[in-house]
Image (tube, rainbow, N blue to C red; front, top):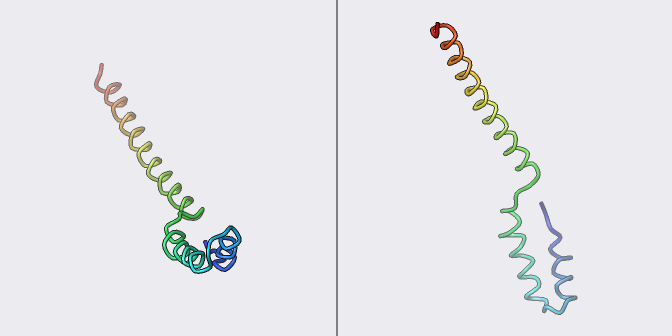
Length: 77
């Protein structure tokens, strides 16, 4: 994600903040805040990883249930 720091600082100036403070805020935002924001791509990757983990866990649970059911049917008589 990028930001037009010039437009941002001009908007701050238009609202009554002096130029030096507006430029400092724009620079701080671009340098310290924006790099920490999560993007849609980051979220998509995280969701994909979670889906994979949940699929593995569900497969394990179903397999364990099937094994227990087989054991009960096979040796329960």
